[in-house]
Length: 116
Image 1 (cartoon, rainbow, N blue to C red):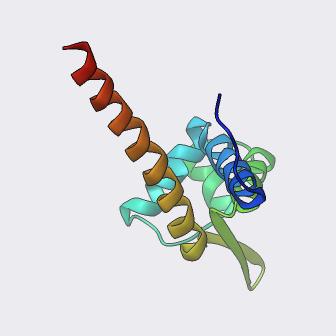
Image 2 (image 1 turned 180 degrees about the horizontal axis):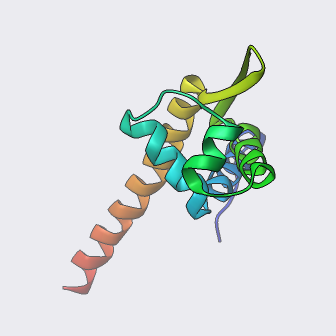
């Protein structure tokens, strides 16, 4: 059983859970790919609904989930709110995900050696 050594470890694990839950949807993943691919730097609810062929309320909900997970930030420009990557938060999330997968991959390699 995994032992949590500190409150900060628990908090960062809960934050990572929030991020992974936010990414666990095909529309949100496609949006992240679109933003990351360089096709666009920011997106509004209207643009997302048109691009993904979903309703505006559905697009709004997806963007809200990504914003609450600190993957995106919102900025009002004129009559629209645009969403773009939250760079600081993304760097933090990347470090946590990289650490998790590096540890898991190391364990896999260790178990493979033991099985031989």
